[in-house]
Amino acid sequence: MPDFWTHLIHGSRTARELDYIFENDEDRAFYNLGTQGPDVFLYVVDDHHYMAAGKRIHNQKCGMYLNELSRSLYRNYPAFVHGLVCHHTLDRMVHPYVISRAGNSEKHTELETAIDYEMVRRFLEKDPLELDPLKELPEEIPDEIEKVHLELIYRLYKIDKISMSRSLSEMRNVMRQSRRVTGLRKTVTDVFGIFKARKTTSGSAQSPTDFPDVLNLSKKPWYHPTTGWVSRATVLDLLEEATEVAKDSIDHSLQHDVHPEMPDLSFMNNLPCVDY
Image (cartoon, helix red, strand yellow):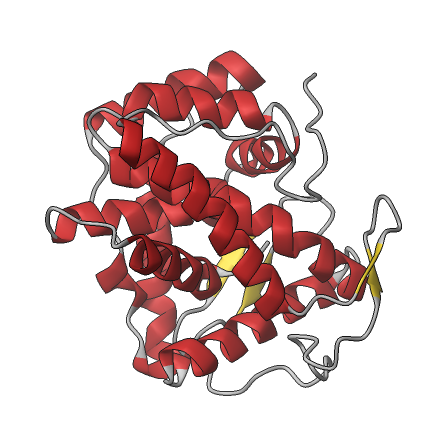
């Protein structure tokens, strides 16, 4: 999946191009949280139930999960829902490229980290060490968001007691502790369920070097890992495509004051989700 800052950059770009109006700083913080999608569950690395929830949400019943959240939370937390639109869109656009280049190994994580590093340098014009991710997120989860997630994840996936509050707390703790050493160090277990628990260094001062041209600016061909379709798209192309798709969905929602409908496409490969 794209990493923390790449999702935040995409969400910010989408909001800016829409002239999106945030009522206050809290509103923006919940939008930012939405851009992280179900990745927040992957910060609870000491509980396999959270790992299972993160994996299944990314691969199974994606449309049902997203649209139930959209219907349930749009009235009171529209910015959070619009952030979710951004997360789903960017994930499904970029992830096939990541898998094509790095497969499902530890190299996968390294490439995501390298992409995050390059995106921060290109769009924020800063070293990741200068950034404080804690400022971008809310400090706590409202009861309504907590309750809707808790009930929905059990109903769709039969995984009980998955708490957004605990996930956000763990996420903030990881960021707080790790920034003291190397900037943002995101500790997750990969949603594929095939990686061991691993750490990435999105805020580290040095980009991984195993992947030259991490954004594919040379436009070399890469192949969709499931269909074999060939593409020469750069990560910047994929970001632009994801921005346009997210803008269309959010703009329709804003213009008609309705919750956005999200397609039943996998976060992982942009193909129809498995609904069992």
